[in-house]
Length: 414
Image (tube, rainbow, N blue to C red; front, side):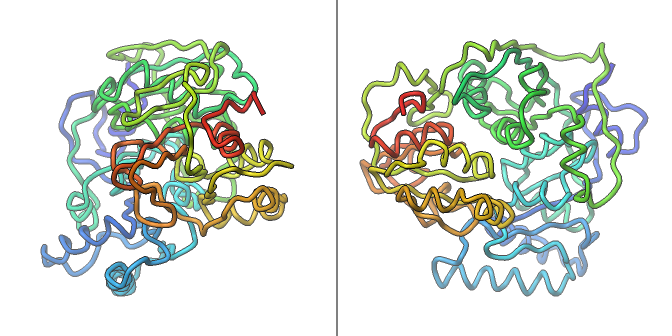
């Protein structure tokens, strides 16, 4: 009678059976901090007076948020972390240009079924796309994991989300995700683990499942989990850094709530400023000008996302500045081999080095006061990409279509 989450925590604590709402001390399988959060985590670790991390093989540090360094302050902070990484003999370090942390951990084989993967970043729930319990913690909490490999948790209750039906043309995982967030609300799954089921979910690619789980945090969830299947195992062949055991919910597992969605009736969705759950059918969006289009981030910077944008942009020209940031070096290389990057460049898009780019308002695409950006990112909070700007969230196809017309446009209209 256990959910996937309860089974993962039972394994991570070594207890025979752990149930929701119990407080436990769990062993992390892998711990991640990026260039933004590792600064505080390392500072706190040093204050503890501990000489060595618990296991340098299980710590992963990618540089992705402000890369390449945008100021001398950023450069100095990153230099300091590089020195600490050498001191601690941490091998799983991915420097400038390797990609976004939530793309790299799956690519490099750390996001594995049945594992507890903890990141000092809220979108660490992405790893649930592989049947892991992926969750974010604060930077000072991460310093405790660096020191001991353990952290306390209240085992989350679980909700079950089922989506049935075939997605229509130019409708993708991002649209389904926005629809779910709209119906549940930004606090509708607070501190819950969301398990995703149904033939729609089974039909999603690995990239689509990553998009879905990535945004579980946007409805308050502690984790989003897709039960692993053949697609999962095929992706992990040659990638997995260690053996793993997939875990599945029992048929009589207990959920605090269940939700059902008919994906066959879904049209492209748009989240309007300034909340992620302010979601509307694109057919209901009034004429809205766009100053910038942004395709990328840990939500939609993967190969199939760039391909979806290229399909729309092929033979067209963008009417507004259009920024494309591949999620990783691997994605960029494959997009180059397939001619996707050439198509995007010929359409007038600007390609930036793999990383987070303007998503967090760091650099390479920050918008000015009063400007409008349509983005494939996961958040549209006020000030997110620049003080006084307006962010609309949509799929890569919708963003590409809007880049052509200069206003929010359905990809079915191109």
